[in-house]
Amino acid sequence: MSAARLNLAPEVYQSSQREKRRRKIARATAIAVSVIALAIVGVGLVIAGGQKLYLDRVNGQIKDSQTKVKSYTDLQDAATAQQHLKTLNDLTQSKARFSKFFEVLQEFAPQGVAATKITISESNAIEMTGSAKSYDLVTKLVKALEASNTKIGKNSAATNQPFFSSIQLSDVTDNGGNQGISFKLTTLMSSEVVSGK
Image (cartoon, rainbow, N blue to C red; front, side):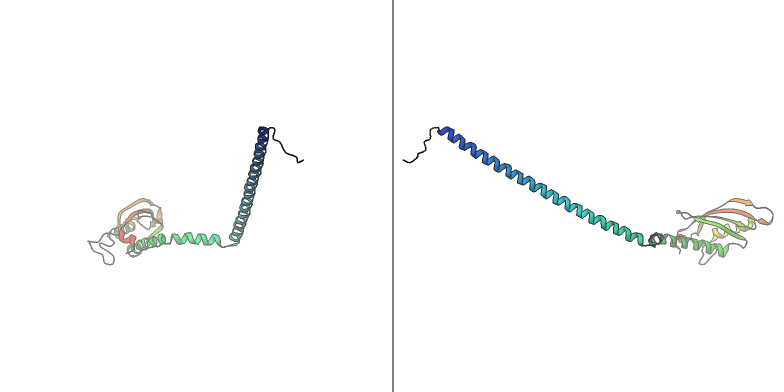
């Protein structure tokens, strides 16, 4: 006689089967979540390791570059030379300005007048401190500056703009005896002087 399975409690059996299926699904879900979490952690570790290797390589390159820069003994001189080259245009313009002033000073200043210090401002004003054997020689210098390009000098004409204007003489000091005088002279230069024409 063959054994036959009798389903005496179908509801209990079905409930048991449903519970088994739920456990399988829960187990499969837990395994899938664990695998995904492990994969995320693994990817994170790989990225972190890659970043560390990249940063180590970059830091090594920076250190190599610093060492190489320190080995250049003339680097400071080169940087200084480059800064001087940037100011070359300003120096050239100042040369033209001073050249015109000295040209007038040399050509028309009376003998016995000497400049001890000359400065030029951005507004094209010249300040000169100097000494002279007498006050008369200084006034001759002032008159020569006033007349330059209008009455005296190459191509001078009354219609020309004076090379120098607003000439002021100040701080005139008698040095006593045969020492002559000290003075300060200020003047504004015309555009022709500034352009070096």
